[in-house]
Length: 154
Image (cartoon, rainbow, N blue to C red; front, top):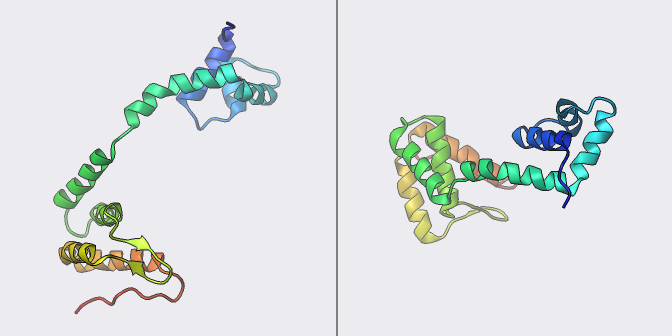
């Protein structure tokens, strides 16, 4: 089985480390001086090189992977620990509502089943006036043109 050349290996390492660089820039940094654009394009299509890049990225991807439970726990932590009015707290509350399927985009209104509507009402009841307005704005963005979310209670 053929192995990558030293430059191909270096290209793969650079590409795996920084996905924001262009193929040509990775080729230049790997030592391909003349025709880096063409060479970068060729390397990006080389299956041995792309397989190596994928293998090099695996540990970083695994390290960044988070389970739904971890993300959900982090959002609940935001809700519990951040002060009322904090934009991250409001965003976490909105995301949790979506995670639990309380807000789904419908043809003309936001569809919420009765049981979930009770839970959502309890959660929204803990919102400050500013947080309720932020949620209203988010709901409005989910509605088709001309749709109106429920009015703010007095």
